[in-house]
Image 1 (spheres, rainbow, N blue to C red):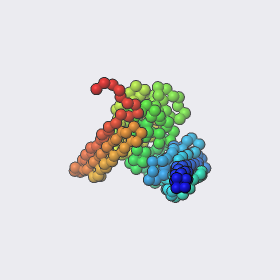
Image 2 (image 1 turned 135 degrees about the vertical axis):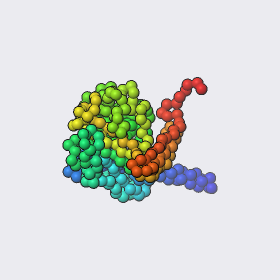
Image 3 (image 1 turned 90 degrees about the horizontal axis):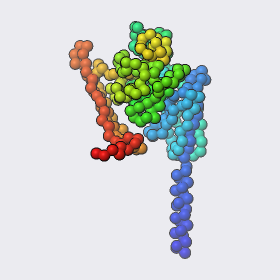
Image 4 (image 1 turned 60 degrees about the vertical axis):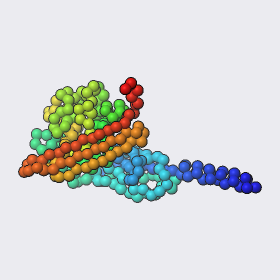
Amino acid sequence: MNSTKTKWSVLLLMLFSVSSIFAQSTISGTVNDQYGVPLGGVNVILDGTTKGSVTDFDGNYTIANVEDGTYTLTATFIGYKTFAKSIEAQGGDITVSFSMDEDAASLDEIVVTGVVNPKSKLESSVSVSTMDVKLIEQASPRSAGELFRNIPGIRAESSGGEGNANFNVRGVPISSGGSRYFQIQEDGLPLNLFGDTSFGNADNFLRIDSNIGRVEAIRGGSASTQTSNGPAGIINMISKTGATEGGSFGTTFGLDYQTSRLDFEYGAPIGEGLSYHIGGFMRSGEGTKRNRLPR
């Protein structure tokens, strides 16, 4: 009799465990702007977790395998105010569609890329997208491709791993990995003499880290006259200057490939009109493919 009870208890415990494992939700929806136009490239994440998604060209996103609980759904996009909403997952499908409002304050940012004279976004006649420190930190990019895909109109594939990516601008023919028609810059200076980065990828010359304080991207317009071989646009990665004293220290741990990375940076003013800034990163791990070469 006791043996029978024990078997039933084990069976009930197994059924309860299985039901707990499958008690997960799928959160999906559509993101539009204030005029009802779908927004592609919006980062949608669940705060405090590693789960998130990026909207496609039609503004759709899906976050699967969400365990039961209460979360804050946060959406960020360049040029728009951050959207946040509390949701409760209790199994099943959840639809959360919303619109994002333009951030008028971002229009007052001074644009220095691809123009003769620096001017604000509001006064600029070209399409400009910017990413500040906060947005870069949220993206947590390991490569230029992972950062650039947050820019509207830019398609970036980091399929080659941490040190290689393919780029192309919407409406421009794909050639040599899509990078032939736009120029990548660091503080206004081109990383490559020519726009074609098929063999000399951007990450070979500048690896994204916490030294980058701002990214400006312009598509078309004055790019063809202000750069060489850049008719599709310019992406300018602007370094921190240390004009304001401060720094940061952060670590990331990759569960998939057991890759660890340590980022650090610090800067401070020295005197009137003079400052310094230093930083970098250390990385260890085998990456996406194990190196089987003899040691």
